[in-house]
Structures are given as C-alpha cells and as structure tokens.
Image (cartoon, rainbow, N blue to C red):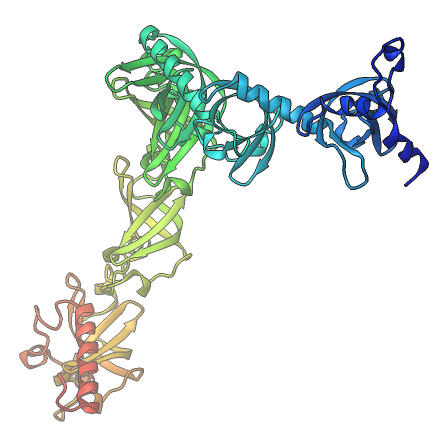
Length: 589
C-alpha cells in the first residue's frame, strides 16, 4: 500500500477549536465515533472531488477514508474540477483494502428509481429514449432501463425496430416490480387509447364529400388503407384513378401523405370509403365532344389482350382496338403480334358509348384500304402476275401485291386434268401468270384462273385430229379397261382393252407398259366432253378399208370410263394399287 493511499485512509479533518474552553473533555476516540454515525451503506451521500486522475476520481465524503470512482461513470471527465460537489452512493464503508466503495452511476440509478416509484404508478405516462434492442423487444431509458416488448411498440407490427432507435417517445407504464427493480412499458396501449378518442371525435365531425388529409398505412391488391388520424378508411383500387392501374402500388406508397374525398360513412360498422380520383373532373364528361366519330387520335398502348389492345387517349380514358381493326391486309391472330405495351399509335374513333365508357378504335382506318382500289387495279379478265403464298385443299393463294391475295380454285388450274390438290400443279413461291375471274372488294376476295392464262388445247382439237387419222403417242397410264396415251401435252386418248390387239387381251399390263410409244388410229372425238378414243389394232387396217363400227365404240361408253379422263386416271391408279396389293397379299381387301 502506497504512502499516499495510507494517508487517504487516515485522513480526518476535524475542527478542534469547537472544543476549546469547554469543561467537558472529549476523547479523540469519541470524536471519531461521532463522524461515523451518519454513514449507512446503500445511502446517497454528498462528496467533494479531491483529485481527478486518468483512471479514477478521488472523492471525500467526510469519512475516515476517501473513495475512488472510475472515470467511466462520468460522461465528460474534462468538466470535473477539484472542489466540485456531487452525490454518490455509499456501496460499502470499507473494502478489503479499507477503502470506501462509492458509485456516481448507482446514485443516479437509485435516485431515478426512487423518482419512478414515488412519482409514477402503473398506468401512468412517462417519456423515454429508445436505447437498444434486446431479445423480445427494446430497452428504453427513462432514467433507469425499462423494457418495451416488441408486441407493445406500435399498433401495427414494425418490421425493422432499428429505425426507431434513439427516438424519444411517450409510453404507458404497464408494470413496476419493486422487488426486481424493473419496469415494463407499452406504446401500443397509449396509441390505442388515443386512437379511440380520435376515432370518436372523427366520426362525430366527418361528413361525406369532405376532403381529408391522410397517410397511406397499408397497400393490398384491392386498394389501400388510409389513416385519417383516428381510424382507417379504404381507398378502393377503382377509386384511385380515372385511368387504368393494375395495382395500387403503381400510384401509392406506404407513409405517403395525400388528400382524399370521403365517399361513404357507415357509422354502424365504423367504415369509411374514400376516393382519390373524385377530387378531379370525370374525363368521360362531355366525351362525345372530345372524340367524335371518325376523328383521329394519338394514344399509348397500356394493355394488350389476344383479342385486341387498349389505348390510353388521356388519363382515365381508354379505347379498344379489336384485332380485326389492326390491318386491312394482314390476318392478325393476336394483337401482341403487332402491338406492345408502351407503343405510341394513331387510330380513328369508330364508335363511342359514354354510358358504358367504351370507345372503339381502328388503326387500319388511318391508311387507305387497298381493297378499295382492286377493281381498278385488277379488272375482270386482266392478266396478272403473282407469287404462290399458301395452299388449301381446294386451291392456292397468290399474292398480287402487299396485302392483296387472289385464290385459284383447283378447278381453274388445268384444262386437261382433274386436280385434287394444288400442290399437284404448283409449288410455294412459284411466280405465275393468272387471269382475274372475279373481284369482290367487300369480302376481300379475288378469284383467279391459272388455266385461263393458257390456251385450251381442246379448243381447236377438231382441226388437229380427225376420226380415222393415225396418231403417235406415249402410254402414260394403265387401267384394267385400257391404256391412256398422251398425243401431245395436255391431250390424252384412251385405247380400250378391246382395241389393243386382234388377240384377246386378258390384262392390259401384259401387252402395254407406261412410257411405250404406240401408233393408234383415232376412232372417236368429243370436244365437249374432252374425250378422244383410240384403237391400236385399227392402225393396222389400211386407210381405205378403215371403218368405224359399233364393236370399236362399245368400250367407249359415255358416262362411265370416258365421262372424265382425270377420273379414269384415278380409277386406273386405284385399281393398279389394289391389284398390286392382291398380288403381294392375296385375299386382302
């Protein structure tokens, strides 16, 4: 123990002059006892600063020894000076080293605790600074540390408690436990009590049609709840804007301040309906004057559906462009194939219903309809050139110009053969010459003919072939009833099985084959039905002895094999196929 510390322990500052001249003799020991009688552990006593050191402060409380207080218990050590008075808590008269144990901080806590106990009761109000977070809540400095449970922080859950750290607020005292020396606070109960009072006041003074200030408290898919300083009102999504919004968060944000109109008050259920758009004029008022029929408008695409697109003309006013009104020439299946949200478009007003708040728009009407010009551009009988664009089972579509297609029916593809599918004659992207057969602008149809752009080989057949004439040709198809011989491109004749040879022919394929060149005599010409009958065996008869008889013609029965050569071709092919199947699979039907 240092000499200085020994002196601190033995320091007694008595004024002995008070005993001079008295008869009664007082011993030093008695005076020492008198100095101790007012000191009690756990009490707050006055002290004087003797010395300020780096790690502690030396305090004299008038006891036989001084005490040391760590500098950590002082907020600002630079403000302390020797001779300053301060109150300290006497925690212990003597420690193991004989020193007095003092605490400035404990003195403050005791005094504050006594203040809380003496001045406040459970249910009372007190201010405090939110100091720190702990498990389950917050610590609030009210002079002493008090506990604020997380459930009692506010009337609504606060996700981030850090945002209120350091704030000084008012609280309600829920519980004071003197034994444990702890205090439990609630801010929620205080807010709820005040809110109930505010709610009563609000319901007595609020009226429909009023404009009130509020704060956005919560946002849902169907609207937003607005705090009117007493109770919440519902601002439905349909009452937020005259225009289209998909979610309230597009316009509103939590804690946003705004003015709303009181639309409806239900005092029984204590519910208030609010409106934001009602503060402004309904844009549909006098809408007929703003957007008359046929007027052109500029707008922005705000929504795209498969059946059409919605275009915003102004805030709160939208028109709809049906998918059928997007193009004169293109067959648009989905509006999204042409338009996207955000596109700026020009359109024409087609119809308007102010009561139902519907405006029909057309984008194609901003351009000239090419079908209005087709009769002048493609008159009936004119020859045109186009590109094969697409096939259907009954014909081919030919693009004549951008957006204008004509159709060639299979019956108008060939003079000489029956076409079952256009791919038998044409290929996609072929450039072909056609003749305009019919024009129907209202239905956007042009009928074209492919064969009409070519000479009909049967038109002058009588000048090329006569009965009795010898003609050469190539076998193109075989049928059970005979063989077809191509005399020239587009002109086929039929040699009946009975006219192939003087000998009896059981099967045509036993005598003739496809591709074989033959010489035959013309025995019948029917230009109307487009039939030519041939006889190979008659070609062996001298010209002067040739004569057409009933035996030659009996195989060429009108209405059956020769009614339609193309049909006969098909029949021949089908029968050949069936015969081949029977040869490979006997008995199969």
